[in-house]
Image (tube, rainbow, N blue to C red; front, top):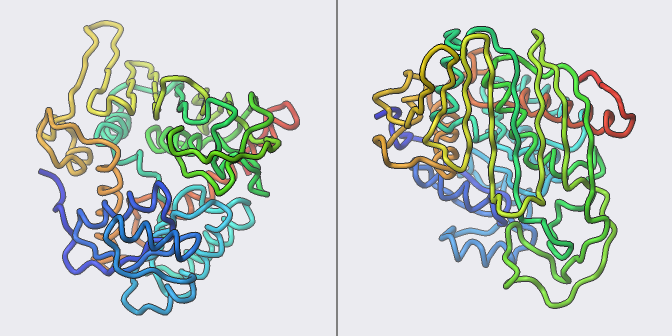
Length: 391
């Protein structure tokens, strides 16, 4: 069933970030046989607590100590956004492969520098963790569109909505400006939606027209900090009121290259929606609809025949999708599996000794740079109230 579950002779990894996503990286790496030799966190004490919880033996004091560890072949960056640029740049310059969470950096100048640096290091993997591409049925949609199954693509619509910042006393470091685009919902989850849309239809977004809204202009910041998705039970008792300018909600009109039209909205204040990404693609001969909270179901629409509901089953999928489906039909593959599949792709590329002269099948720093340019265009569009071309 699909690709091997482990990557033989894979280089060891170190992970930066002990919050929500860092441990997800650790778990997925272990599933494919990659040794995680150390963890770097916001402070040594906090990192030590996380390392004990997830079974990582070493905690680094800083990035220099991590990069001095000769055992580390790949650096996984899951730190706050503003730290990505320096950590990715120094890791590449130190000869390490890099897997970075999105956004790749906070300005187009920074992502352009990283894109060019990665291009000058052709034997080093430089990946961005757009993991949603790796749901098997998303890859099935891409393969069917490439095979012209629904004819000419007309439009792409959808949303990415959550509720974890619904109340004014919900807080996370993401609500504060990053000093770049100062986007939050768009940069955090909207970039996933846009990357997936472009990946599925095979065309880039060329221009945007955006409307942003901040429904809670003031929030309560817990004294001592707050982790992503922390429940109300774990909130700090003491808090201070802060001004918030980052968006809770965004709606964006899109024009893709080749004439495809699109629209999506993102929200982190929609009660009851925990982590719901929806994607609908309309073609001249049919349509597809997929939703991340029911990832093993693909709706296929038809005008002249019955609509269909395809359940994920490797035996029923195109080869490109079946290779990312490791369980039989009826055994749901979900969020953690997408990390595993992306990492199998990246580490397979590394072990095979490939270079950027080959076509990388994983999302690269080129994709990360494109997404940041999209964010800059969206921020400018919302500020100026007009369509903006993507740089």
